[in-house]
Length: 175
Image 1: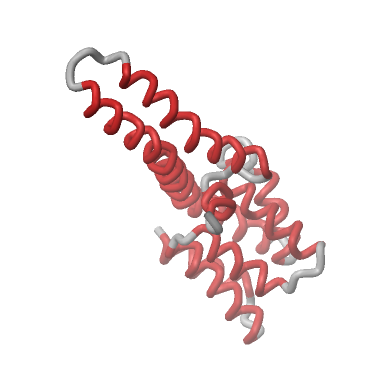
Image 2: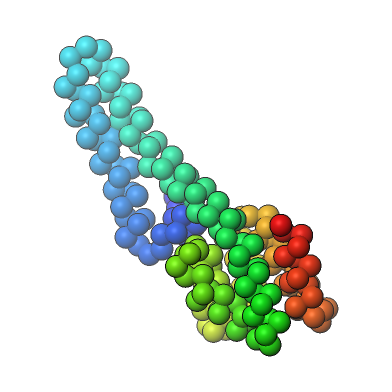
């Protein structure tokens, strides 16, 4: 499955271990369900087919729910992040430093948005252009609010609009 690493990352799991566990669960759970179905005394053939089929589909359903839950947590944390970003920019920080600071400050209360903001910082330090890092965050999250936020940041970058004013207007619109 080519999109599995992306789906796992959208659920908050990075690296090879989550992908290996997911793949193992797609193989082992149906086998265990087949064995369990063979012990059911009535309608044995039905259970030997139905249980493995359900066990094969179950990891995908769980992963889909984990992705939705993480997206919802990010969506709920956007207003707090924008408010803190406005405060940091008004205090004189540049947008990159403000994003890093907001990521650090929201670490305990909103770990999902923190992870995304720190990912932007890591990508920029690795040499990715700022606009591309923001666009990638919008693509990863697949949330209209993050897409609008990234679009607003891209516009302020391209047209030289004062970031503090754009952020304030965006904060009012998102509420």
